[in-house]
Image (cartoon, rainbow, N blue to C red; front, side):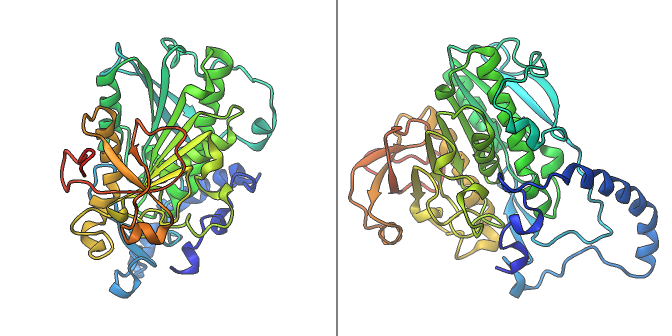
Length: 390
């Protein structure tokens, strides 16, 4: 991979402990520049200035690749900084949705600004009640478990990556479910733009967590954060910034480009972000992390679908394999068979399918005392779970 995407921290320093205090000012400057670019862009086109990146085969996975959107469909993603003629402004609002048994179809929805979340706020340990979450949390039930879901690149709260998990929890019932919709920030074909906004969305989720505990009597141990792709790192930031250590984070094929080569766990989801962090790797080494980063890491089929694998035919099948992680998790919520995985001594043993350790369940019902690396086989289509005999 080229140095230009070796680590998102080298692009804009959005690491939890390194975020620039001038970023908000920078955004206002960029907004003004974007307005000017709208006027002069037609002039650039006259002189033949191009906004596209050449899609040469030898540059695949370096300057461009195909990535899965929230519906599992492969789309073109550029892995370079946008050219100057491309508008850089991204809206600074995200939507939060609240679902329960009475609002499974029509949730409570509010818009939250992520522009005002600076280091000063997160440096204070005392609760800062401003009522911004009151409308969203009017029907919140602290006696129930709480699930917070967030999507990744080219997705929304209406994408399958969120909808399937949300619907499965609604079917099971007796749970609070929040969905974070950062569609406006995630839409860019230039992948680094949404990647650098992950920290800001994560900070917004952290404020929701703090409000749930401070003002609405939620137990941090019963808060479970679930994120797919870039959303997995968003939840890592959320767990890091929240004043209260949440009970669990589930990372669904955490995004690899611009993150896996970051030095230090503060730059991506890792096992320190919650009491328990489980990770499902379904496109390991291509779109998702190869190395284990959780308390427990699962590699279904070695990190790829049974056939064909995302590594062998990545340009065609990467989208499907990257999305399998959220499909596995959604199915696990109400699965009768269950995803039974075996413990491995190392990544090398996992790759060789040389794993004969104790069995545990992957997905929603994973035992929270589990540790280590696990391998399992799945079907190539729903129902994916093979049960104990798989």
